[in-house]
Length: 397
Image (cartoon, rainbow, N blue to C red):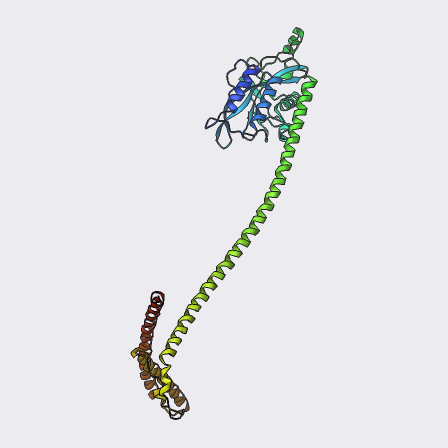
């Protein structure tokens, strides 16, 4: 990873303006952080810049392992590392990934041209990726960048991650920072501890009030976060209960709609049956009115009454229906008699088949004629009922 060209450090006001500008951008050029975490990200970077002036917030393009590139915030610079009584500056880049601060940042050691990464190292991979317990045990929202840098310096002080290689040194194994005794001694004589990585940072002591304030703020944020998580779980439980009640009400609504539809269908079926009964009643009333005077023509005794003269067809269609029905029933009786005869052996089977075939054909024609006559009668009855209804509606004064 190539270190960007050095720029003069920004003052606190410029850092605030820079962070407010980049975090407030909208649209395609906006940074990929959630709106509810941008304020906390700004506070973390401002606190880091106030404690470690060598770490400056910037924006740069970060490339993920899958090849995706995204514009992210970073803290670029050096962190102090005390080693054997000497303070060195370790160049690092702290990337604030998209899920920060809920997830830890990505830290890289960024060696210059005259530095190489120590191999093997317990906390730094050959590519420069840093992994320390503070990053692995990152806890939102109490974890922050200031404590991260302090833990980085403490971890590196036990085992420096970089070596300084000298071209004039014939030794193939480059000496570590702890082996540069002449430089350290000369520096101690002058009162400073120079670092091969750049500017020396004198030992820093934090004000107790600032530390107390920062811890109080972190504790307050943690408490608020815990309350938010608790309220979220309670609201989720309430929503689950409401969803269950909604499902029950929806199922009952479906059952009610189904029952209502069944009752409507039953009502329509009953209305159709009522219409059929009314039509049949009208037909019977008409027949009774038309045949009331025929009883006067009967004889004095039942024995003197001729059956064929008792019933008279009202019209040609009725007479045709009467004849067809009588012929159909007569053929049905004949076929039944032939069945009994062939079972008893009185009629040969071949003769039985010929007679049944002839009778069935004749019966089919009578039934077809009766069906046509019945349809014509129904049309006449409907027309007659319509005429009577219109007469009763408009004929009365």
